[in-house]
Length: 388
Image (cartoon, rainbow, N blue to C red; front, side, top):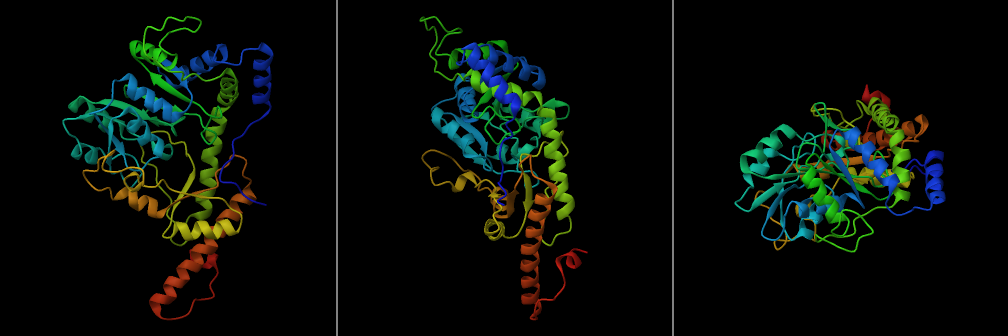
């Protein structure tokens, strides 16, 4: 039976809340969205949460509300999902791509500092794969150079730096509630704010230049970045069990790592120690991720490579982006990283099957390399013997 890379968990609670919303006959943004915003604000420990259609538009809205536009530069880590950089390009500003820390894939503050210019106005730390950036160093850099901080916490639900939730350190934090996130609204995102005036600007921006619907007087320039109460209903149901979801993600990663510990040429990424980690996926590092991915695909096991370095993206050119120092660690991460199936409903036998297939490929790869180096033929040792 095929093993999916990931699938969202939708249960009776989501169905009940959607039906209630339909029966209330209010399907556009309304009271259910306000309920979700209030629940999230309390959870994140921020003053306001403003829901928007998705994480990329959250980043775009944050940058626009802060006045970022043509002629400005924004520091963006080279190792992140494309939405981080496309949000900058869409504002008319120029992303400056900088290297990351090889340990956790998060932005290197030293690389960011080396790439600053007189046009740099903001930095976008991305809390990648469920680990916090070094927000102390990021905020010190921002204060020293008078930069806005827009946190990309798309994968950061439940993640902390110290005892504070990511997305609440900078000027605006941005969340994603896409189907593969720790909680989902299908499509969806949120702006996290502690400044009331900035929060009001975000509301104007997302609600076509007015604070409330029903008025045809638009005092500000804005857009329609609202969501629906149908999405919010799913979000409320998902949020009610988010702590169980977080614990399940940790248990799943631990099960994989116990099984793969000692497997030839499989390296298990370490936590950076900054705070609470919520694994976005179960990640491993191997010498040949593409070969392993193809091997697993033949066994109907879906996996995914690490993010492709932004400075290599065909759509990013010298006309719309800047690279002042060629990133190295982002390339190393892509060249070795693989995301294993991480669905919350994976059984123990499925996890063991995935791991057995990884071991089989790595064992074959290891013995081929060993026999080539020694000029002999592969041994008959079993994978378990080799691991021991």
